[in-house]
Amino acid sequence: MLTMEAMGYGCRDNGLTFGLNAQIWTVQLPLSRFGTDDQKKRFLEPMCQGKMIGAHAISEPEAGSDVYSLSMTAKKTDGGYILNGRKRYITFGPIADMALVFASTNPDLGKWGISGFLVPASSEGYRSEPVQEKMGLRTVPISELVFEDCFVAEENRLGKEGGGVSLSNSSLEWERCCILASQLGAMERQLEDAIAYAKERKQFGQAIGKFQSVSNRIVQMKLRLETARLLLYKVSWMKSENKSAMLESSLLKLYLSECFTESSLDAIRIHGGKGYLSEYEVERDLRDAIGGVIYGGTSDIQKNIVARLLGI
Image (tube, rainbow, N blue to C red; front, side, top):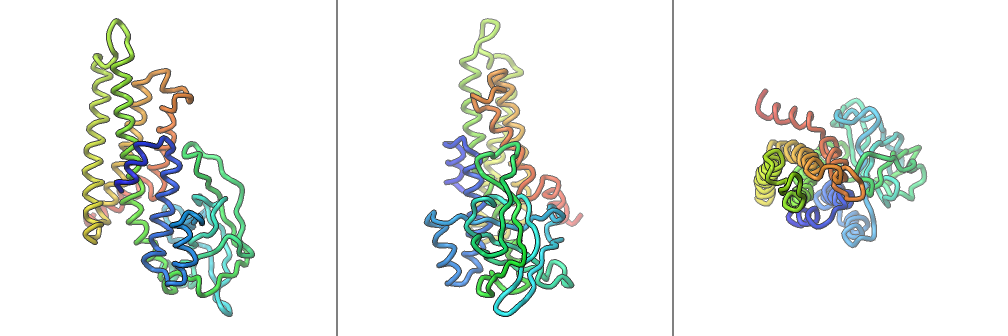
């Protein structure tokens, strides 16, 4: 998390840091925790060495926030499974060398019939659709993945048959804990840039930071940064102690994503017309920040999770 926080501070490319986090927490971590020695050797080691890119494929056209209402099927056959279905909003979809794909092996069991599969992109019946243009995070490509009678060997099933929910819940908790750490670093960079500009830019005979409307925005940016850092570090400590952090990770995902969005908007307002022009890259953070309130579970879904865990 500290490494990703530093990446967010030192790198303006939020797409790069998002892509790194997406692979680490939703592909590499499940492989590390649930993969066989052979699977780790074939998939995990090359990803850690930067020789392979992995995608996490669970979302579907009709399974977004309701993530376990999957329609994709994995029918048992001799030596493996036949996959049929379509996945949507897949990070690295157009360039991935493999995908961790979730499909139903027993539709009658609902979410308890979902299994995870490690599917090489070279598999017959595996197809990536064209890159989808999006508002922000433009440096990390996303696309739909299509599986048409795609055979996957049984040795490429990750974990037990029907164990997909356990795989997904584990990785999603880690993702909520960690995927926004780089945004914290970006918020610190934003704050420093805003302070420097507020001291440098002069209007009506004085630095704009002397105007209360500007200084108040900077104070709010500082407050969001420090409170979000406390939540992030608390969750980091809990995971380092092997504690469950389902409630805390949802609070963190909700709060940090909303804070980055608000601070990105404040940064634009402080920079004025300069902040609105793309050439200065101030507005870029806002376009990237909006994705954070959607991917990994929307802010509304995080509120639902927290309410449920509070017994409401």
